[in-house]
Amino acid sequence: MPRQRKKIGIERSWNRWGWIFISLILIGIAVFIFYPIVYSLYLSTFSTRGFLKTFVGFGNYLRLLKDSYFMLALKNVLTILVVQVPIMLFLSLIFATLLNDPKLKFKGVYRTALFLPAVTSLVAYTILFRMMFSNEGLINNFLMTIGIVKEPIRWLLDPFWAKVTLIIALTWRWTGYNMMFYLAGLQNIPSEIYEAAEIDGATKTTQFFKITVPLLRPIILFTTITSTIGTLQLFDEPMNLAAGVVTGSSVGPGNSLLTPSVYIYNVCFKYSPNFGYASAISYVIVMIAAVLAFIQFKVAGEQK
Amino acid sequence: MSRKLRYAFIYIFLTIGAIVSVFPFFWMIVGSTNTSVDVIKGKLTFGSQLTTNFKNLWDNYNLGGILLNSIKISIFVVVFSLIVSSMAGYGFELYSSKARNRIYSMILVTLMIPFAALMVPLFRLMNFLNLIDSHWGVILPMIPSVFLVFFFRQNFSQYPKEIIMAARVDGANELRIFFSIVLPSMRSTYAAGAIYAFMTSWNAYLWPLVIIQGERNKTIVLMISNLASGYTPDFGVVMMAVVIATLPMLIVFFSLQRYFVQGVLGSVKQ
Image (cartoon, rainbow over the protein chains, first blue to last red):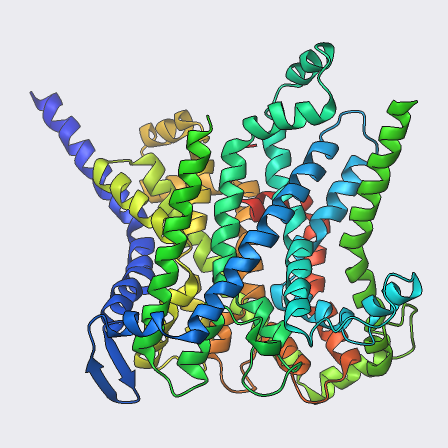
């Protein structure tokens, strides 16, 4: 009997230590994450202009549907999502597969070089790209010297090319980063599987699609979801790629670089601030991210 | 023969990839030695403006003070967020209970939420706490890192429990076990976590942009963004600032490559 009581005592102190260890993070998360989430939901039912705060219920959400800037911002990120994310992840997968070849030389050098862009700050590399893609700049010079184009491409002055520039920049920054996830995953695939496939006469392409891709599915899913969330949140790149290139309030030529996060920022701090409306926008983005993640889970799960 | 050809293609492909990846770094360093006009025209050779650009940045844009701001913010974020998150990771892993596991999964869900969604209430909170245009306003919300909690929990799960048990038998208090036995033996995990925290705080843009308003408190990233978006930016100076902002990352990367990759990727099981 006394023994039993002692055990309960230990368990109780055990439990107390558990709470002590997590108490600091709980306070931090409660104040800096949970409170903002709940408060912005509350705020999204108001229209706030300066000190004026009027309850509008779902009014902000209805207003969003008719807001052409918001729709354009959404269209912009979805375009980038559909075009850039598959290109990047496919490239990452190819690089990882090639670098996983045990017979390849200079593996470490290639891996380091390809990963290097992931070291840069988002603002710094964006500005670097802005300078490279200037009208009479490096990229245009190069393209004209090797004769691919006759006239300089209006990279950052044309709505279409501005988006292309953003896509190139994003792909440069994140391909090596995602490659590292795939490389880590590939190391868990025993090389015997490939050797057996080789003996059975499977080509490298067949091996790629029949062995590598299916076995890496969980990691591909993971990188797809993180890239999706990252794309929906795009802020640093469009903000800095657009700055100074086009005058006035347009984010990139014809607002081609306007993203929801940039729009939220502008609604809060650039135009006459409306925090309520900004909160509603951010909630819609959270919902879209959740729905897309859910769909991706479903798709990846069903193909088993 | 076809095998050799295949390898030739693979090497060419990888080399192009490597050159494209590394070239902007080379160009950035070249650019910091050139004049504004040369940078924008894409000059590819070293110039003589290195000291001029640096002096310009140092004298006219308060580079020294701004670097100190960035360093201060990064150090506080790294130290506090490592302590807070590693304690939490340890707590969730070693004293797991139903209630705490439920809290843990709730916390993980917040990783999905874009920062822009938290920005407005956080801004008002900081306004209320009188922390607008202060470094603490930048630092505080960056301390609780859900990602690091996850990262540390994963790593503590591989820590041998026997050592903790033995220390308990010797009568050591739980906090002491953590700080003087577990923590010192997990150096590589802490190094990787520190690199992650340093990367996120040094490179942060949106939150400092919201909080910091005066020139005096700006970070190096805000400074670059500002320099480059003026009406007539001096691109040689901009390049210099980009080099200076990138240099610490490159140094950390090349000296601690293994931890760096671990820290950036987090805890994908190797």
